[in-house]
Amino acid sequence: MTGWVEVPDGSPFPVTNLPYGVFSTAEQSRRIGVALGEDVIDLAPLAEADGLDIARELALPTLNPLMAMGRPAWSAVRAWLSDLLATESRRNVVRSHLVAAQDVTLHLPFEVADYVDFYSSQHHAENVGRLFRPDGEPLTPNWKHLPIGYHGRAGTVVVSGADVVRPSGQRKTPAEEAPSFGPSARLDIEAEVGFVVGVPSRHGAPVGVDDFAEHVFGVCLLNDWSARDIQAWEYAPLGPFLGKSFATSVSPWVVPLEALTAARVDGPAQDPPVLPYLRRQEPWGLDLTLEVTWNGTVVSRPPFAGMYWTPDQQLAHLTVNGASLRTGDLFASGTVSGAGKAERGSFLELSWNGSEPLTLGDGSTRTFLEDGDEVAITAWAPGADGTRIGLGSVTGRILPAV
Image 1 (cartoon, rainbow, N blue to C red):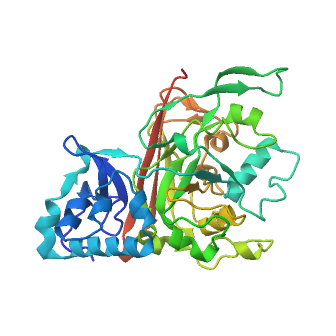
Image 2: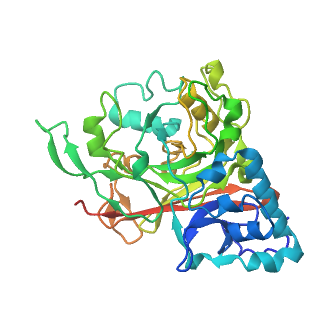
Image 3: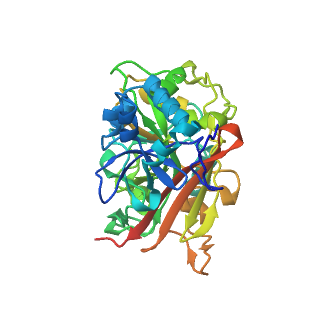
């Protein structure tokens, strides 16, 4: 029910969404809010007025304590808020705690404990394989047996809007006899979806695919900035390191899993059959459509529903060796790419490793990012009652190397 709430048509934040973030104003320090249309709901004073114990957690400058409380608490807060927005007699109370979105500063919504990035799009993996192993099989032998991933750097996860300084490092092309040091000349993006862990797990106790929703609080957008030339020289034999660790951007709003019920779909059929611990118990594929803009020009619309490995499988694989979860853990889907050229989620693929430049709206051409370039990733999903909900956006601008 929408109740008394009026949200502008086309807003990513209708009453069926209610994503969480952390905001501040000129008068108020950081606190938890929920996006609603063109406003942010200041939750703590509303909860305090209703005598809710959770008002303490909602007044904090991070989502972590709320996320650690678990699904019963998450569901209770969402139900309380939905009831407020559906009850005409509460209209004035809620309106007194609305802050115009244009007047707030949004912050990193949670303290990142650990960060893991997966490699779960078959189309992306095959594109990369064709680019770098043209005479071999596009997929490595293990790719359809387990969700491949790497551990990233939690300390360099930044909120949308933060500038990204061009990284420097060692580079070596096949034609060069020795490596050189300098700014990355092949700076790229990866359009991804992130999953935020709320409830921790015990060290040594794997988390099964059927426990996904008991641990994961919600979903955000993520840009895994990538220095392809640094990555290409360093990645063998241990995988990504400095080519990835300089920055990862996330959207400021975390959409709770309950808001995405209508977006849940079955993941693709998996052949060969996966091992028992990876067998899906519930449909945790998500019908999300991402959109990537480069200096204001839409260059790609990657579909998330076709991701070969779904987030419940990723979480199960992440913990199957006994690795524990912590509140604030972030794990990402890996680059989202579809079958078509206009559905590729990285500039490496869109420019086919630099051989097919893209023409932007101003007539300029690009293969990889130049200083001053800005990238924005947005996403939409079907919501309850036939609505459409958004995941907000994750943006970043490239600054010259220092």
